[in-house]
Image 1 (cartoon, rainbow, N blue to C red):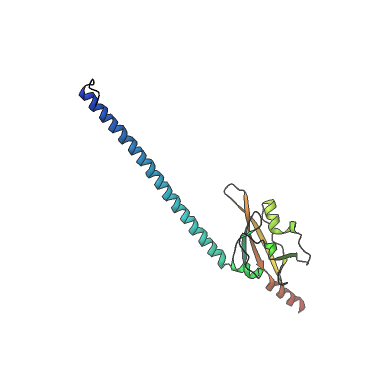
Image 2: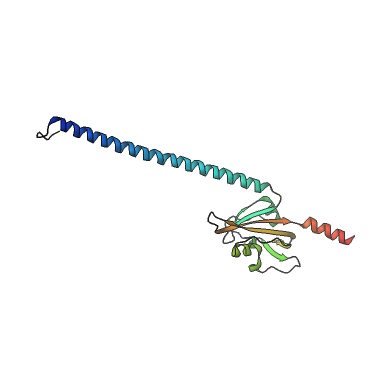
Length: 184
């Protein structure tokens, strides 16, 4: 508009074009930021749902009578239910203790299971579930409990092993019943 050599209408058209371009850019920016806010809200809602599902899953595991715990790839306990703490006779420190810190594992015949043959370790090394076999778990206080461990790998969405979920069935009552039957 300050150029006196331009016809007045061309100046007006120039201003109108500038206003339209600025308006278009503003609308594009508003749309992009709105989409970003919407995606952030959807992501937060999705994360809330996952947290709720995880909480429900942990509550479900907590109510089961079988001892269940999870570990990371280093073997550190990342979750355990009450039945697991009862079996171990102690509540482990999450992300600090391993099962081997809570007691010893023996074969059913009473021989010590070497560390490399521990079902959880085998599961981690080979990335496959280990078939349950009778074993004896010796607590730190010396109490021995007849168990059957069932470790299985935990994997991420790409199939990489990120830990182990292990269920240990306490079969002490069954062993006592078998002994009583044999005795009679």
